[in-house]
Length: 183
Image 1 (cartoon, rainbow, N blue to C red):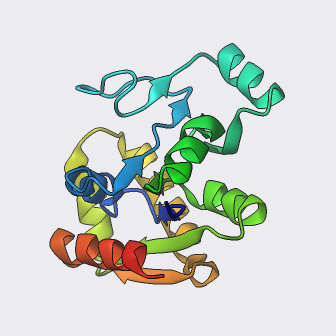
Image 2 (cartoon, one colour; image 1 turned 180 degrees about the horizontal axis):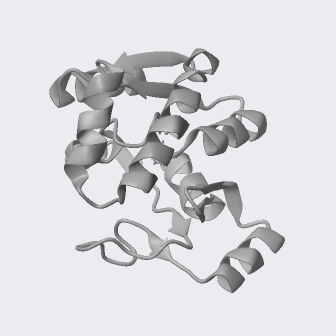
């Protein structure tokens, strides 16, 4: 049995990473790592599905015991990818998709040279702003902070192995499936 591929999907907040992941979950050749986070659940999020919601103390303990492939602080909370489920899925020949932020992608690159890093870009910055505002989950101050961060994140696109523009979800899914199938 062949080893699966570790694929990191990253990009600015609001670009559509979660939507892409929802569609890719219908593809049995992919395994989706569930990150741990210290942030509070958003409406409709279930512990163990979207994230493992943990306290700051639990997260500190996980860092100290080396349980994370990567972890980062983002937007006032910490997020981390547990090593064990990723390694187990890869050993079974599954392609592992990590939906993580730029700082986490950089950590994965430093630890796992075999990882394939994919940067998801919006069609335009204006469209990204519309998507962020359309969520209606953040204050105006928070929206402005997210947009400023998005500009910084988009500047990191050249650090990635592949760049995919999210014009249509189906096109992005097709691109990721194709990348996973390459030898």
